[in-house]
Image 1 (cartoon, rainbow, N blue to C red):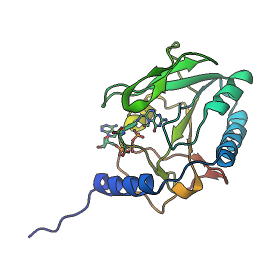
Image 2 (image 1 turned 180 degrees about the horizontal axis):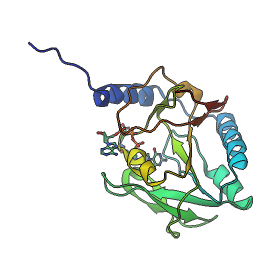
Image 3 (image 1 turned 45 degrees about the vertical axis):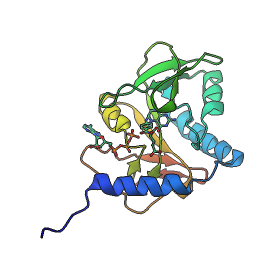
Image 4 (image 1 turned 90 degrees about the vertical axis):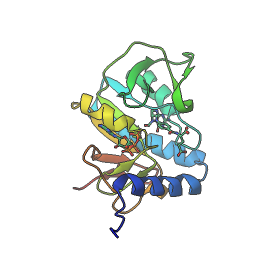
Length: 188
Ligand SMILES: Nc1nc2c(c(=O)[nH]1)N(C=O)[C@@H](CNc1ccc(C(=O)N[C@@H](CCC(=O)O)C(=O)O)cc1)CN2
Ligand SMILES: Nc1ncnc2c1ncn2[C@@H]1O[C@H](COP(=O)(O)OP(=O)(O)OP(=O)(O)O)[C@@H](O)[C@H]1O
């Protein structure tokens, strides 16, 4: 009988489940440290438009960073989650804008669509080589090819790091990953 060979999709699912099941609440200090490190990298890149993310439960909360960025003169856009199979749409966010609830409990503003120069990417898991795992919707995988000029920065907690995540052809390697502890410039 033929041996069953695990596919990257199945491996990813198991790792995702393991990490989500063992996830602890993000401490306020960790949140601040991730945001501080992100701000440092963003300042160096001098972008006009930064794509951030409105948090889902259990994720690092970028809302304070969004406010800081807008006050520092950057434009902030947030993703609207379309039906599966379509890329994310980035819409401009301003302070105190009412948010709409979208797919999978995500929230997005109804501002104008803008093209980001920097894209902050939430991680469920990452490795030192820039491999990433999200919630499995494939949304960022489908969106990033449409923004080849954008600088990509993954973010999460150091506890989400794993050795050598399985990668598919369509997966994008992240050149920079920011945690509460460090700014990682990933290697091939
Ligand atoms: N805050 C935040 N916004 C984001 C993302 C994200 O990771 N975090 N996304 C990143 O791509 C996109 C939304 N992607 C998602 C894709 C799939 C599921 C999803 O299937 N959720 C399952 C449960 C997942 C699980 O716990 O295993 C569900 O709601 O049933 C959620 C979000 C865009 N916005
Ligand atoms: N560019 C693409 N074209 C077609 N299918 C894709 C593409 N990107 C991802 N997929 C499919 O989408 C599914 C989810 O992909 P994957 O597990 O890489 O998502 P993820 O990176 O964890 O999620 P997200 O990008 O939403 O955070 C997989 O079945 C994958 O084959």
